[in-house]
Amino acid sequence: MKPSHIARGGGITMVDVSAKSPTIRRARAQAFVRMTPRAQRALRAAALPKGDALVAAQVAGIMAAKRTAELIPLAHPLPLSKVDVEFDWIAGGGLRIVAEARTTARTGVELEAMVAVSVAALTIYDMSKALDKGITIEAIGLLHKSGGKSGTWRRA
Image (cartoon, rainbow, N blue to C red; front, top):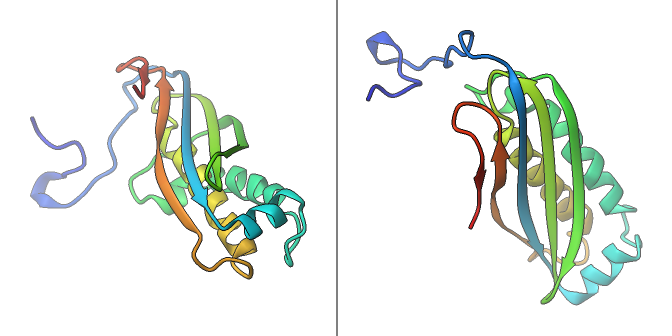
């Protein structure tokens, strides 16, 4: 099977999706941010020195999803119909970030969902680092995707 992003002559190319039919596409991704209890308390209370990091991270994730094609060299620009970023606290001092992206297009929105959680997590780090420089961002990955030729996929 010929690699999809290798052009004649060995260079790279963007995959031609013009022959594909637009379908409704949806993807959900997640990331985990781990921090000290002190940083977690300040984040929950919106009492960080830089302000309410959860609101800023939500906006940053949405904005980042919309700019995915500018960040990932071979990604197609997509007309996003929805991007949502949500947060859940987990046991052990962590924050779970989940993003959902939707479109009707010829290619999927997995990258947009993963870029959204990545940038949201980095925003949490940036706004919380004054209280905890050891914050870690972990396990960025796809949870679910639907639409297109390959159909539905769900993480086990």
